[in-house]
Length: 502
Image 1 (cartoon, rainbow, N blue to C red):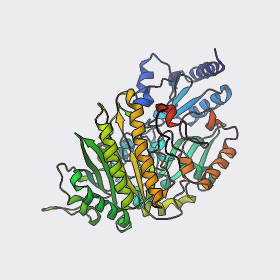
Image 2: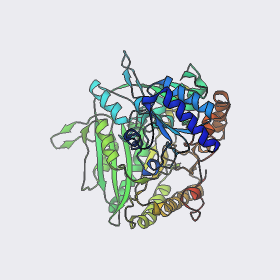
Image 3: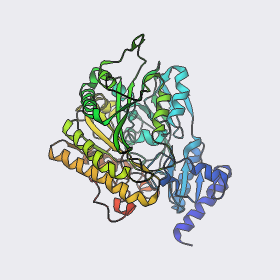
Image 4: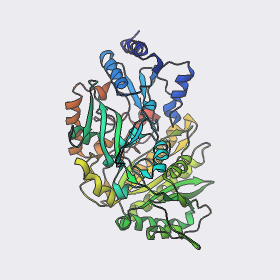
């Protein structure tokens, strides 16, 4: 037995003796049920030595202490919505901590904050809060987990109003590498608090978040189809929205694109963060959304609805059971970059759409002025975006496919699109280093994208709270402070192009 196998055997024995009802091994129904919680088949295919489901901070602390003693590799899963193998999963060389049962929701007595567990998915959170006429700044896909979303930044429908989700965290209960449980906030361990807001899983395991709560009366929105022949007018409306967002920060727009039956099409998400008036001759659409609504459509699901329903609709566009990849790229809001990306995707994506079982989708968003203006709240975050309120384009190619034999061609094709678009943005003086961790591929480096100053800060916090590098070495997966987990060539084969670097 190897030293690694010994460490795994020792750790699983200790865990199963201490918490026998919370440790599940291969060959049991409970193990398969837990493993089925992953969104992408790429993650689900890995089979950990055992799966541990803690129920509170003490249970998590116990695991951390055991892994420290045994040096047993492990990883942590919140909602399991990661894209690449090992992002929040692990193979038989280690143990998976599944936070599914740390799923509390507690509204404060003054109704101004909500404590939530990392094992929840956002549809659960909204479903509990909406009857109370409250909401939080959270995920837009029902299936996304609370923990990973918040620690990477978190873009929400309400973000132009209130900032990204990480700006709306009041405090976090964190299990450190030593097993100690601390509260991180603006006044308690403030450097740790700032590092966690965008730094991912590099500093501890968060077992509770206290979030700002806001009054809620419903929303308007839904998906709306736009054909390729109206792409020019659609992009005009999108540019107007991006530049004029401060005039009405309740507006949220996502341009979703894909190729169906050989045609480049748009199925966009249009949202308004309160209900609109339903007049006899139609809804009174806010000004920033009117240009979108004037475009011809064969599918219009927009209506007065709820945040929870909108997240379910968005999740239906990225169902479970596929192989998935996300990619990130940011650039200054400029029509030339936008047009270039669309044309690249139209051309290169058509090659993927011809393959059986491949969905060549993706989306385009704006990091609005309001989002960037909020990033200095509560001591700021580490995303490197608080230096300006200039809006940015955010590109997120998001292909899905069924056959592992298509891994290389899918990834190399999307890499071609991203690399070419980044080069064009740089040529025009419009490039930006930011990479949104929740959208980046496993061979991109979002920490470097935050900038050298932010990376040095994160490294200093890691040295203070994790001097032995426990979360950099023993915890596997995720985006580490030292660089991307692996190269594109390692994941999909040596014939791929050189991956996008920042």
